Length: 246
Figure 1 (cartoon, rainbow, N blue to C red):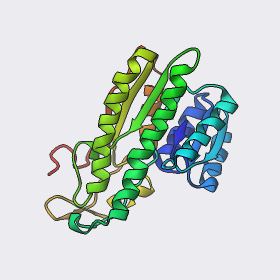
Figure 2: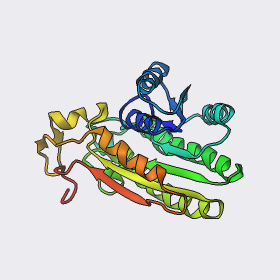
Figure 3: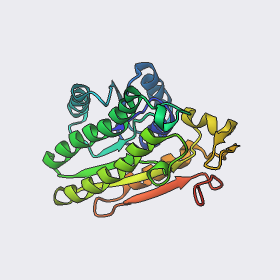
Figure 4: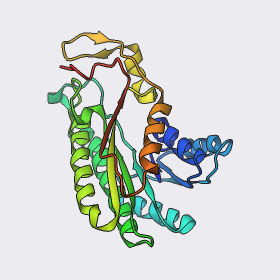
């Protein structure tokens, strides 16, 4: 299952998994975007795809998502916990509204928790037991950008969720890892190619990498036997200001 599969990293990962023969449940808010992903997968995929429009911040919606995937496929071997939002841009910390804070936390953290919990329950009870959860962290799980408190806070929290899932899943053959992505070329990173605020106050154009480079890494993580796990992986544009940021 891939959340946030209607665009960007989620779409690239879904296509890579389908091409490798996985049957993939596609989750996301926009039905049309999911159908577009499914159409792209249909051209070269070895596995089938199922579109389930879902708001991951809604517990009932997440329950319906997992029920639909289980009804079609009977088990869940992989969750790529990817759905997320960057939230307000360029808003100073003291000006962040409660509504903007909640909107980011609800999707990036609560949504990730709800999907991970639902996957965990299925993986614990299915036969053969176990499965893998891969969380989409971010470079911001390590270091912030200016004016990014809601997003950065949720991504630091994602690291704690990943570690907790890794520990709590050991007894049930559930492996959990995290991929921290920096400057993949998606709609969310368009501003980096136009120039983005740096810690020293300058606005600088940053290099980006292809989303397919991320998808190949997720596929590698996904295809490991459950006895092996990539706990944390960082995949980033080579020249981006991460090492030395700030």
